[in-house]
Length: 168
Image 1 (cartoon, rainbow, N blue to C red):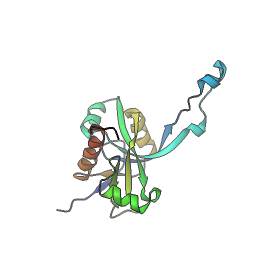
Image 2: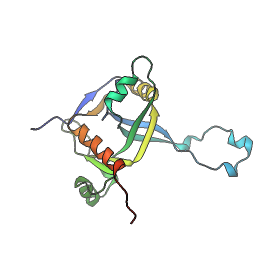
Image 3: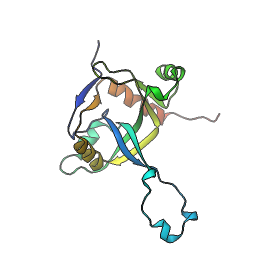
């Protein structure tokens, strides 16, 4: 059976598999040993903020439990890149699931969006309130991955973090 892969959604209701673009992420630089006490209290440098495309990993049931009233708690997301960031040979290996830390999402039928590669080695945790406010403020249509593709994505994430690593 051929299931739809996604739907387009708006608003601040967040579910597992939601795509977010240009999410600001802080990349702090540890250099306190090189700075005086006064310099350590200075504000953050804007260059330490990166805008990242992401997909929501947290389970929808866990998110919905937290959204009654004021959103609280944390939400897990992973980095999402377009296929142009990768070599075709690597994309084929990702498609065959030979790289455990990647998951390939094939192109979407009705919108212009290249294949997406989820990188499980880049995990971000943000407050649910931040993401709800971000969704509300951006107020543009976003993509939501649908079942059974959402479950496959979640299964791959779980597999990556639950595997038993052996020394080389």
